[in-house]
Length: 157
Length: 382
Image 1: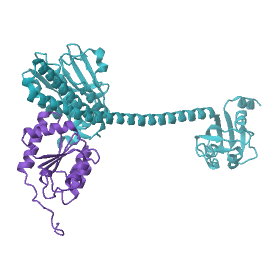
Image 2: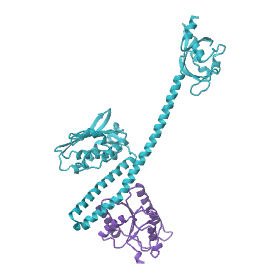
Image 3: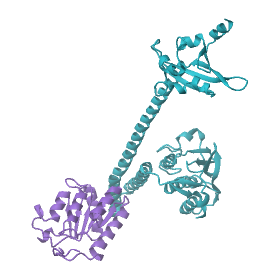
Image 4: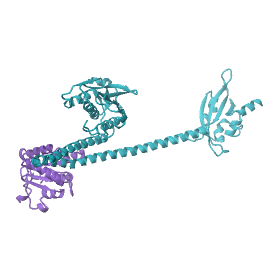
C-alpha cells in the first residue's frame, strides 16, 4: 500500500521534539513524504510490516530513519538492534538523533550498526542546519541499496 | 647485711648469677614481680618454672635466649618478657637489661640483670594502638561514605543538567520560530519580551553546559602525563585572542614548570583563569596580565595576575563556590561555575588553589598541583 511508504521515518515520542524536527524538515522542503512512529513498538511494526503496517512491503524501505533513543515500550537501542540484525531491514540507513551525549549510548549505537549519531544541539539554528544536511545527504546525495537486496543464501562472504 | 638492705630498697629488680648460673642476688623487687628466687633451678629451667613467655607470640621463652644466658655468653642485651606466674593470676610485662660481669682478664665471671615492670606502659601502648586502629578504620569508613556521597552528587548534577537540555532545547526552538515566523505581527513590547526569553535561554544553556562539564571533571579519571605547562598557557592565550580584540593587553608569560598532570584538565584551569583575567580588566586602558611561577609554603605554584577590578578579600571564601559570584551579571557576565571547576580540577590533582585581590587593584590566582615539582630531566629533550 502506497500510503504506508515513506521517504523518512521519524521515530520520536516527545511532541515538542517532533514539532521542532518537522518544522525544520518542512522549511527545507523535506517533509513531503514523512511517517511518524511514536514509540519503539510502532516503529518495529513498520519495519517488519506487521500490526497496522501489515500491508506494507519490505521492497519499499524508507531512505532515512531518524531514531530517538528514549522511547516508550521498546527503546531506541532495541529497535536498532532488531532492525540491524535482520537481513530484510539492515540496509536501511538509521540515524540516531537524541539528547544523549552518554558515551555508552554512542558506543552501543555504533556497535549495533547505526549509520550516524547526532546529538540534538540546543541552538535551534544549528539544529536546523543539522536537519538540512541530514536530509540533503541521505535523500539526495546518498545512493540507497537496490530494492530486494537480500543476498541469496550461501553467497555471503 | 648492709648490701642486702641497699639491694632490697631498689625500685628495680636486680639479679646476679655467677658464671655457672648459680644465683647470687635476687632482690626484693624481683621477688615482688616474679616470686621466690629459683635457687635450686638451673638457668634453662627458669622459663617454665617462672612462667616466662615471649611478649608477641606468647610462646615459652627459649632458655638459651634469656638475657641472663646471653650475658653469660659475653653479650649485653635488652628485651621484653611476658611473665605469667602461677602465683599471680595476672600477666605482667618486664623489661630486662643484662650485662656480663668480667674480671681483670676479661673473662666472664657472672651476669647482672636489671628488671623493670613495664606493664602499665604496655597497657597504655596497647590502648593507644587500639584507639589508633579504631580511628584509622573510622577514617576509612568515612572516606568511603564521603566518596560515595560525592559520586552520587556528581551523577545527580550530571543527570539534572543533562535532562534540562531537552526542555531548554524546546523553549529555544519555539522562541526562535516565534521570532522568525511571527515577529511582524508582534507588538514592540511583545518583541521585547521575546528577546528577554531568548537571553534567558542562552544563559541557561551556558549554565547547563558548564554544570555538565563540572560534573564530568569530577567523574573522569585523571589521564596523567608529564606536560610542559608553558605551551598550554600560550595556546590558551592564542585561543582567547578574539575576546580581547581592540584592547591593549600586555602579556607577561614567565617561565612555568613541567607537571605530572592531565593536560586537558590543566588547560581548562588556564582557560578559566586567563579568560577571567581578560574579563575583569575590561575597563582598563592598559591591561597587564602576568602568568608565572613562584614559591608558596615550600611548594612551587603557578599564578595568573591581572590589574583589573579585583575583589574585596572579605569575600575570598566565596570565590570558588558553585554559583557564587562577586559581581553583578550586568557588570561582568558569568555563571559562577568557572572557578568551582578550577578548584575541582586542582583538587583532583591533589593541589591547592587560592586567590589574592584588592578592590580596583587587580587579582592574583595561584594553584599548585601534586606533580608540579617533578622536573622532566632527560625527557625534556624529546
